[in-house]
Length: 255
Image (tube, rainbow, N blue to C red; front, side):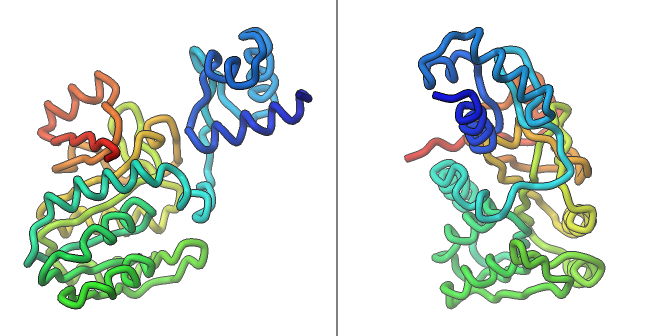
């Protein structure tokens, strides 16, 4: 196997998993640990990965991966997370669902809920919930982000300010080790912060890959979240912080 081909596949694994581990890569490619360490060093030197103890992670960036790629990442985990979250959402409430493939997965799990009033700035969520005849669906205004069907900007925030939601379900692009929720689009962050200000309770849905990713813009802290749904245990310190903040953490398992 050529070096360049191995580099390409290592980067594909890192984009899919959020990180790569030296021992796993050595077994995968059938090469020595030293060979993999050299590969990771070369990829880090070229700015394509950041070295960490035992492996490497995607570098901190300013641009999110594409929507189509995000759609196919961890579908089983997202479904498990969405089912666990939806099981805690009662019928007969007002609900906000924001942008992201994880919140879209939650929308799929709400098709049999009764008498929901759902407000969203996600065109995909609105289209999913068309299949629930008892749901009232309200779409915010805003600038359409063609890449993923998101509505962002001042018009979206102005619509949200007209409501006080019983519950909001949000996602994020990354979760920092100190518990900060992060994203890439400043306009989207402003909308997410408005959602937090206008919801009585807030649920976060985010799979484990968000633990090892980074993004430049801060949305909020996990201390502002009532319930967090994910698919892997949190790092010990962050788990202790959530306990102190009163943020309930639910780890969903693939069925």
